[in-house]
Amino acid sequence: MSIRFTTKARRGMVALTVAAGLAVGVAGCGGGGDDAKPDASSSASRTGGTDPSAQEGQSDTPMAELKGPNGLVMQISSAKRDAGGFITVSGELKNDGGNTVTLPAALSGNETEIIRNGRSLGGATLVDSQGKKRYYVLRDTDGRPLTTTGITSVKSGDAVPVFMQFPAPPSGTDDVSFQLPMFAPADISISG
Image 1 (cartoon, rainbow, N blue to C red):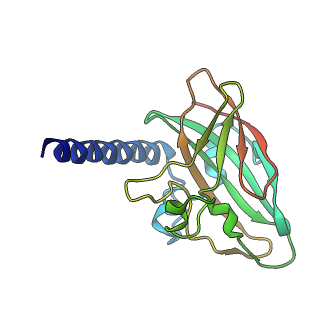
Image 2 (cartoon, one colour):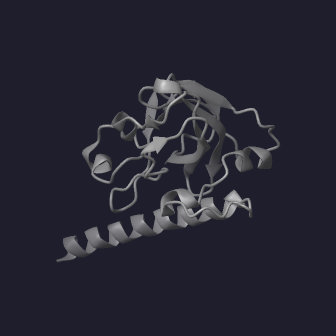
C-alpha cells in the first residue's frame, strides 16, 4: 500500500510541477491583447508569433528560419528560458507555397504516446552539441505534448503561431540546434 501511495504522490507532484510551470510560462508571455482567436486550448496560450519577438526588442526578422517540404517554413521568433525549468520556443509555421499543405504526420514524431494524442509538433527537439544531449518536447501527465496541436493544414500564404516546450539545458548552455522532422535544422540562442 505504501508503494502505491508513493507512486500516486509522485504523479501528483509531477502534475503540480508541470501545471505551475505552464502557469508561469503563460503569465510571462504577456499576451497581445488584440489576438482573440478561438484556437485549440493548447495553442490559445501562445498566439501572435510576432508578439514574443517584439517583447524581446527584436524586429520582425525571425531568429531562425527552417525550410520544410511543399513550401512550409518554420520561423523561430524566440527561445525563452522560463523559471519552471523549461524552454519555450515560439514562432510561426508559414506556407510560402501556392497550394494548401496538409501537415505531414512526421511532424508529430514517432513516439506512440504523442501520436495517440493527434497532430502536433511533438517531433521537435533541441540538441545541445556541447553537452551532447537531445531534449524532446515535454508532455503533460496524460501524455499530451506541450506544443501547438490540432494543425492539420495551412493555406497558401497563411501563417500559424506555434510554440513548443522543452526541458531546459544547463544554465550555461545558450546555443542549441532546433530540429523538426522534414525541416532543415537551425541554430538558435536561448534567452532569459
